[in-house]
Amino acid sequence: MTQTTSRPARPAGRAPRGMRRTRIHRAWFSCQLGAALVVFLGGVACDALGSYDLVWYTSGALCAVAVLTALAIRRRPVRVPAAAPAV
Image 1 (tube, rainbow, N blue to C red):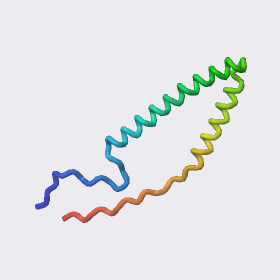
Image 2 (cartoon, helix red, strand yellow):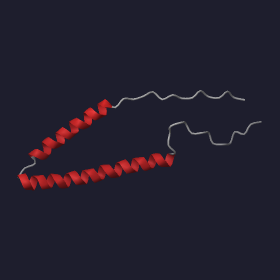
Image 3 (spheres, rainbow, N blue to C red):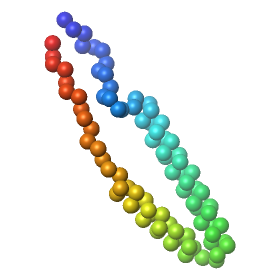
């Protein structure tokens, strides 16, 4: 009789669960840091120029770049190995 209580092997190419959480937290933190920096720089630009016009136009241009970058990402199919026959 074979042992059936062991944990199954993790799929190839997938990080352990803790690593995925760390990546999500790192991405979230960098997003928050970037947002705080942009707010500060927007205020500096408004103080220097007297209006938020340049900030709005720059934000729109960065959004357009983000959309084009996201559209350029190609998805590759994931190959799943065939299951081993039951013994």
